[in-house]
Image (cartoon, rainbow, N blue to C red; front, side, top):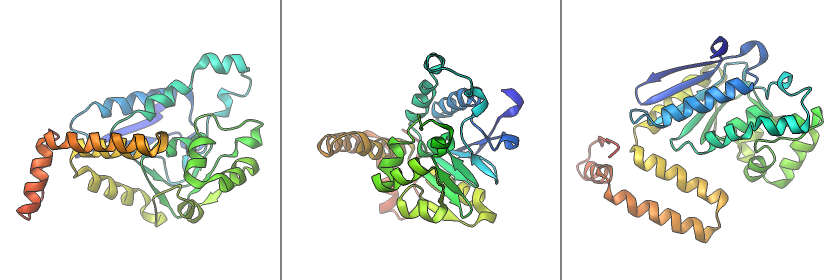
Length: 257
């Protein structure tokens, strides 16, 4: 990977991935996104990993796409790049992805954040889809996921004006999950990741899938899928262990089976 634009390590059952292009505010180049999608797939297939924590640095989660990659491209060239296939790889990751966000989460950075399942944001974080300032629009979900998260009125305001949302606004509108003090933004997210990682891994994947179904299916369809996932969990060792542990007033020892 070029200049270590991604750093990664494992802490217990949590895989930690850090975007590492601080000189360009973690701009999301195509090689970086390819490596990120592949790394996420690698951890998704690793049974010892229950949760993935994705982070930037204190100044920026990711301030957008790498404009240098696109500035002189034609419409046909952008189509040939097929860059959105990478985003589809990220979309289908089954394990929970927790975002640790500090600083700028803009454009493609905001879109990447919206592919995560829990967003822990520093009080100094800023969010937006400012592509309009470049003569384009978002292309990786910044009009669609953003609208589903915050509603049409706010989405139109942010997407058409290019303005940024503060962390408080983002929380109020439902774009992020929690705000934490800027001094402890990463540590706070890691605590959440470790808490989530104590849950049954099969149930975690099922819960994520079921919640995401609510975004894409009708209520009737998603209820059918929810019940199917619910019933399937009763054939797992983790369901037996979880309920026995509850009855015995002890912590469960989930094995992912």
